[in-house]
Image (tube, rainbow, N blue to C red; front, top):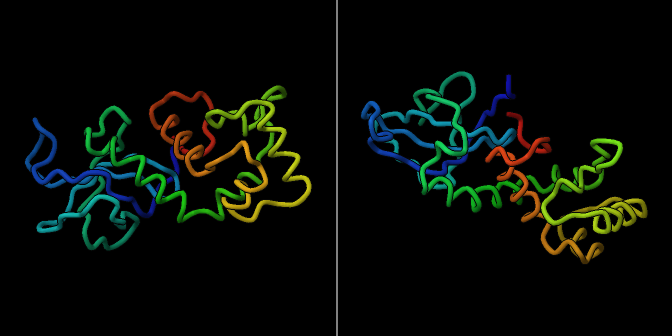
Length: 179
């Protein structure tokens, strides 16, 4: 069973639900911790905006009636898919400390492959540059990574692209998602 999220960020809102289904207001969103893709039924008169955070945990939910379904990437609407990049980038910026910790703690995932090499565009030379810098001292921020490892111009983009690949099912091994 995948880890549950307490909050989602809205990717798309469908006032009348998906076509061919019951006419009820639903929002498609992504979990803020485990990146689960979910569809939730909204309470009457609640119309969330893209990127808005909604509580979906246990107990009273002020805007969400219930979680309708867990979604695969291909079940997202076109709007949700296009919004995903922006929402992921914002979430990655909000969780900078945790993702910088990934750069400080990542280890090999197999005897021949390091977790860094699973990030898009990172090969053995880039991986070695990250490891060398990390050995000197831990990274403090995304900016610190960019300054010290010039071959990594944007760590947030690497992470966002990797998460999106995992959600699409394009990755055999999960680094950031729980499904």
